[in-house]
Structure formats: C-alpha cells, structure tokens
Image 1 (cartoon, rainbow, N blue to C red):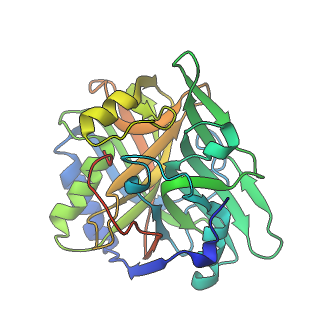
Image 2: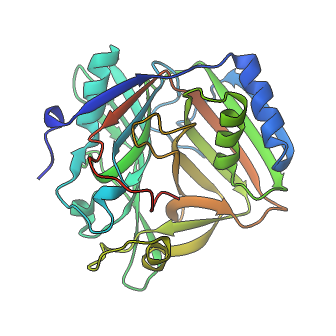
Length: 322
C-alpha cells in the first residue's frame, strides 16, 4: 500500500547558488585534475526531449529543486517493504509549494518492486502538470533476470510508485541557461560525478550546493550495479552489499540522471546518486567508467535553489551509499 504523501514529513532548505563565472572557473580547475580535456560553460539548454537523452520535457529550467526521499536504512540491513511512495504525488505537492504548474522529475532511486514483482533500480524520467494531471513517463527500471543478466524495462505513465529511497532533480522542464560539462580521457581516479562534487565542495567550502540533471556517456564503458531481489538475510557491511549486488560493465551510449550535493546539510543526504539506461537492455547505478583512455562525458545540469527532504529515516547508517 502506497504511503500517503500528506502524512510524510517534508523538510526544506535553501541552497547556495554560486555566481556563474565563479562556478565555471571552479569546475574547470577541479575537473582538469581528473580529465585531460575539459570544457565547462553556461549555454542555452538544448532540446533534451530528443535523442539521445529522451527526457520527458525539453529543458531543465524553472524553479530548480533537489529532492531526496527515504534512504538506505529502509533497504538495509533488511528491506522495509512498506516504504512505497508515489513520485507524482510528491512532485505535485512540491509544485504547490513552489508555485509550479508543471514539472520534470529525473533521477535515481529504487524502482517499483510491486510493478515487476522483484527489487529493481529506478531510472526516473517523468513529467506531470497540475491542471489536468497528465503524466508523461519515459522512466525505466533495471532488474536482474533469472539468468543473472541485466534487463531494462519501460515504466508506463500509469505506474508512478517508487520504493525505499530516491534522489530527484525537479524543475518546470523549461528552456533557459544550463551548465554544460564535457570531459574526455580520465587521468585521475574519481568518477565524473565525484569530481564535479569535490570540485564544488573544495572551492565553495561550507556552502550548501546542489546540482541535478543528465549526462551522456558518449564512449567507453561504465561499471554499474543492479540490485538483485531483496536479501532474506540481514546485510551489515559493504562487502556483504557488494556480494548481493550484481555488477556489469555497460557500454556506451548510456544516459544518466540524478543529483549531487556538497554535504549532508544535517539532513542525512546522499551526496550523489545517478542511474543510467541505454537504448538496448542496459540500465543501472553508475559507479565509474572502466575505460579512462577513451571515455567521454557530456552533461547538462541545473543549479538547485531549494532542497526538499522527505521521510528522512529516524535511525540511520552510512553504508550502502556508494
């Protein structure tokens, strides 16, 4: 049974929005420590509803918001199956508070296990609007099939449930200025998102910054996991988690969606979380690329103005967040 959205605790926080010029300089300097070729700029958002991104709306602008619901303690050590949310309802409630008539919600979370009868990864890509309740879904789920292979499925517009945890970038899906980041040839050990996040936290020390959006792995491969069905025995360590998860090296092209924040802000936030999908059967949780010499990333991001924390776990832990 889906939890009633109005019964959930919504906590909010204003985010720091850096000056564009300083943000560009900080990211350029930081990313060059990890990639041979780096380009950072603010550009007019391209139409992201077309190939290869296929977002449910064309842009990333309009009341940019970072949303996190649930958390890893609802999955580990044992799953709490009652933690079943309605993503559309949560987004519509935020729309009311933010005076938004429509939304685009993209990001990473646990998928609707009730829809596919097994635990799964959610790659959320959903557009909705207040007046008529119309929903456009270009969301996906990824699961481990009976042969231990990765299987990607589309999630229909009629299925807006999500389980346990998630990190969503919410906006009005409009055009406007967005942050574009291109990186080629990884020379350091950090993944693409970690290097962005650490570049921001190092330069804007102590500032609460949130980014969300999408990136394309244009070439190379990415090491990604897909959760198997819920564990019947408690999981307490990273080693036990990694034994339970199923890992794959997934080839480009991969389109990822998600969020990052520079710190937990006393809200038990997940610092970064991106899931990706491909036109074929691939989908999963992004860890890092495995092809440093040939990898190329192209990302488009919005800078969050406000953060919403929903149903934060009362008892928490720090494992299962890689």
